[in-house]
Structure formats: C-alpha cells, structure tokens
Image 1 (cartoon, rainbow, N blue to C red):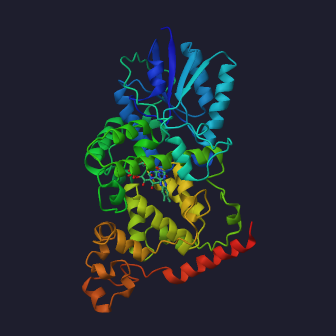
Image 2 (cartoon, protein in one colour; image 1 turned 180 degrees about the vertical axis):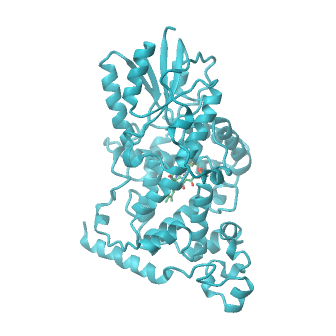
Image 3 (tube, rainbow, N blue to C red; image 1 turned 30 degrees about the horizontal axis):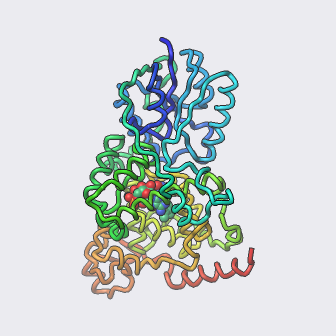
Length: 475
Ligand SMILES: Cc1cc2nc3c(=O)[nH]c(=O)nc-3n(C[C@H](O)[C@H](O)[C@H](O)COP(=O)(O)OP(=O)(O)OC[C@H]3O[C@@H](n4cnc5c(N)ncnc54)[C@H](O)[C@@H]3O)c2cc1C
C-alpha cells in the first residue's frame, strides 16, 4: 500500500475538530497509533485515576476508528522508526502537547526524523492560543491573568473555529508490532477503578453529550451557581478536555453561540477556559511550575510536615466535614468541585502547614482530570506562592465555607454519611454540638467521626506567623 501517513494520537482523543487528523485525511492512507510513553514521563507518568480514564477513552476512540487504532508501549522514537521502515512512511502528523517533558521529547523526535527526510506536521489541537503568541508588548510572558486574558481574547485574535470530522478516513492498522489495549497496563490489578468509573462516561460522544447538557441546562446561572457544589452549574468537562475528547474551541463556541443564555454567565464560563489557557502559558514559560515556588521567597517557608495529619487529609478524616467531604469525593469519583478544591487545598497548606507539593502529588494520582498545567498552577495559586496567586493571608475558613456554600448540607452529607442526622447548625463544626445533639445523631466524636486534627483558629494564627517570617526575609 502506498502513501501511508502515521497519525499519532496523544492528548487529542477525538475525531472532530482534530487539526492533525483533518489535514492528514486529505490524501492517502492513515495509520492511527497511540503510544503509552512510560519511558520519558518519569515523575510525570500518569496517575492511577488518569490511567483508568485513558483506558476507556482509547477504547472508545478505537471503536470510532473501525478498530484500526494501533497501540504501543515504550520509547516513541523506536516505535516510530519501526513503523517508518515497515510501512515506508514518510509523513507523521500530530497535535502538539505542552508539558515540558513532552515538548523536549517531541523536539528530539522531530530533529531526528527530519534529518532522515521524514516530514513531521504538527498542529494546535488543545489550546485556544499558543502560549508563545499571547505575550506582553515587551515580549515577556504574562504573570497576571486579567491582562493575559484580555489580550488572548481580543477581537483581533478570536480562537480558531472548530473543524468538522474528516469526510473520509482511509485507515489501516498495524497488526505486526502493535499490542492489545489491555497490554498497556493502564487498569489497576485491584479493580477500585470500577467504583470511580460508575460516575463517568468516557469518549468523544460522551464529551459532546456533556457539553450539550451543560450548555442547555447548566450555563444559565453559571456565574453564581459554580460556587455551590450541590448545583449542576459546572460543566464537568475537565477530564474530557484533558484527554482531548473535546477541544476548547468546541466548548468556547458552543457557549458563545448560545443565544438563550445571559452574557455574564457565558463570559464567566469562557473566562474559566481562559484560566486553563493561562495555566498552560505559565507551564510553558515557567517549566519548573510543578515543583518550584514561582515566588522564591516561599522557598524559606517554615512548613510543619506531619505525616499523620497528611494521611488524615488524604483520606477525609480531618474532623472538618467540608474538607472531609471534598477528599472523599475525590476518592470516590476522581473529581472534586472547584470551590471545594480551593477549600481542601487551603486547609492542607494553611491550616496544616503542609507543603503544597504533597497536595499536588495526591491530586495528580487521584484526579481523573489531573493536568500538569492546571494542577500545578492551581496549587501554587492556593498556596499563595504562584503568579497572580490568592494572597497568603486569604485563608479559607472551613466552617464559614461550609455554611456559605453548602448551607443545606446536601453535598457534605452525601460524602460524610455518618453526619447525616446532625442538624445544619452544627454540621460544619460537630465539636460545638451539645452532647445530647451528638448522641441523638448517633455521633461519637473520636469514635465514628474524628475530632478536628487542628483548631482552625490557632492554625490560622500559626500560618499568618509563618508567612510573616518569610515576608521579613524580604527575598
Ligand atoms: C488545588 C486545585 C487543583 C486543581 N487541579 C486541576 C487539575 O489537575 N486539572 C484540571 O483540569 N483542573 C484543575 N483545577 C482547576 C478546576 O478546579 C477544575 O478545572 C474544575 O473544577 C473542573 O471542573 P469543571 O470542568 O466542571 O469546570 P467548569 O467550571 O465547568 O470550567 C470549564 C473548564 O474550564 C477550565 N477551568 C475551570 N476552572 C479552572 C481553573 N481554576 N484553572 C484552570 N482551568 C480551569 C477547566 O478546563 C474546566 O473543565 C484545580 C483547582 C485547584 C484549586
């Protein structure tokens, strides 16, 4: 067979609005491949929850590609070379990825293959704006969101309109070197994943359905409703977006072109997509974002690491119901509502004084939407050490947050059922409930629900003192 192009799927697991696939499909035949690269990723290898999602997403993509998607595991350059030799390939297509390790790897692959006269065609399939295009007038990257977004969003520079599915796809499969999807080792040996995956449907069609449902039912009221974890005003598109089952362009235009919805809700939702772009821009320009404080004065921060407290936080046993609900939502569903991500993050960093990087790693392993740019930038934001971060002295009070954003207790009681019968008045501070109230609600603190592992007010004072100590250093 002649004119075979390799289409390397990576974080773009969809057929519609896929610029690399669209271009590659114009002539000739396509050999679609997915490589699970566990060689170059090192400490950024996907977490357990992400790997589960990936398995189901690949399965869905393979079905959509007439079961012609070929799977591999290992060093991409070796696999590509094998395919080039076997099928006389002279063109490779992919959509660009933006994690530092993938950028380095892809750069090396491009250089090596181009020197062997292989044509490499790369496209933007996952961002509204390339990170190297949205820069300040002096050519340096933005560190503050609002001017970044204003520039990215300027009328002169609208995001690319989504592409349709290719009209025809002449697909071929490699049955010689590929392995079965099951051999990528994505699913865990103990099947905890089934519990998480009950909450989700993976793949491109599911992502499009989610978008339609959200635009029709959740977008109106988004601006306010997005703060309340019991409401259906958030899209829950983040895992679909991370794996590229849907593009930001498809989401952007679906929201923008919805005429039934008030512009403040639409604008706010689109600006959250803007935060995703901003995080990617930060990661691109500051590749140390996942592990290094962007504000170096935080390098001297006197963390107070305590393994027992960290374990209690991880497993939703801090004695603070809104924090425990969030951490158990994470464990049970692989997702946490944004408001609650901020609450649990603030609690770890500012009430427990545990380094944000422990939180970032736990999220990396447990989130189905774990995303290096969004996760690192958001943790730095919560800790106060990032670009455009929440000021350090903004400490989320877990009791006030609970009363304000889960006033009916619907969300908290769903994930912390042992508090089901506790009246709303004490739901977010059970230790304040009189003995007879606790006993009527069948709660014995320290026995079937933990005593608080720190006192919120004391720990707040400690956090402020720790912050004052680094401010003095004036680094
Ligand atoms: C400590 C912490 C860790 C986080 N880790 C991740 C992560 O690993 N992966 C991830 O995708 N998001 C992360 N976020 C950002 C945000 O919480 C999620 O993107 C959001 O909750 C996903 O739900 P949604 O799709 O319903 O959001 P929606 O409100 O419907 O927003 C639509 C999309 O906009 C983007 N978005 C929304 N809020 C943010 C934000 N604050 N920063 C960047 N992009 C945003 C997401 O892609 C999201 O899917 C984190 C936030 C915090 C505070």
